[in-house]
Image: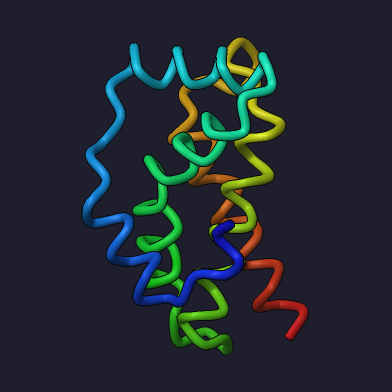
Length: 110
């Protein structure tokens, strides 16, 4: 779903999405584990600001900001699919480190 959105759409979506409370995030993670595809989308949408923040921070290092944002969103989806709260800690920390590493890799490859 996120691959088909423009950069402007992603930024709008992030600005309209309230931050997730810890209880809501835990519920969403349980729904993901139960196979609810809407829950995965909710978790990613709730953390789109991370991808935007990291794209802004890394912009100017050799990749267009839109490409960095798309890399960040794809990484958020992957991070949400593989997230284990017992192993990875809070999702925001797990997602931010994954997104940052992914963007740095994409810059070093290009």
